[in-house]
Image (cartoon, rainbow, N blue to C red):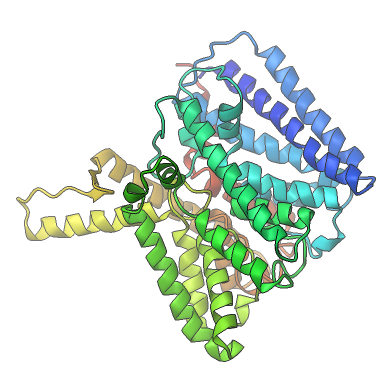
Length: 480
């Protein structure tokens, strides 16, 4: 393990975080809030600590291999969350540091689970930072650095593979930095488009910015206690559309931009994702029609909640705790499915689930025809056995972590359903669960210990388990 390049790289990330924290500082100054001092102090601390790390470990081998890549990603996200929590804690708006850490991890991992009973009590600067962490964490802070700054290390592919969600990551362009830049330009372009469209509704510029950050990063932190419910039907439909869009593989948007829309529209994962959304919207709409009494409201609420959950954004327009059992069951299933690989969404990912079913289908064929040669194909390409094994291994570790977290939460005051959905919503980076952790409630009832456990679970879910586990494995830090 090349420890020097690990801490040198983490220092670079912290410097970038310090610069990014200047944006909410400016917002706080615009609104003439005294909280700007805590934001600037946190920004200075992040930048200063990063500078010290870069100076201290400047003399190092700049090549990043797999072990270093996983360690850089895991440690960067932990340090970013630890420092990003300081404005909430120092300002007193979240009095306990562990709760502030939970809120910040939830922001960066784009989970959207909150411990704040009344978000309207927060200052504009901290609310902006809270939502901006979604946008920063959505595509990945390390991918952002690759896109903006010249590479200082070799083999950055290990860092990108560790941070970009999805079972199969590929390059759009020959140079990795060009790929990162392309991804972020698409991400930025879609975010700006949503901001503009929301300005045509009943949101001002500040509201359009924070809700677009939450949608783009598929995070879901709102600035009102009822999330999106008090906004107009127009604004709700705009957010619904963009939640759906940000759950799609960004590679497809690139293909469309370069005039290869026909190829993009042939994506099996895309059509599977669309089909799951369409069927879920229709079934839930039929199931809840008697509650709302008219087709327009029924479709609006059904489509919004389905898009919010499958994209793992977590915004809400209604309390789906009040829906019939069938609708709530579909909501729970969507929590585990998530969006497409290469999107900002969480969950298991549609492509991973497709691969699981195709593998089962192949194995069943082998039982009937032992001598036949059956290959698993995804998006028209054969999937090698190593990829299939890695997906199987991921599912096993995912289930172990899920049930371990669920077991720990069983020592809390909450019920089976609440603990189950709290675990599901954190490991899949969604936000609201059911019952006391539903869209009309929050996670403040969990003890500080349970908040730490759930914070760790959110990080595992966002980074898809392996970077965190490997970063804390003793063998990772041994010399080669």
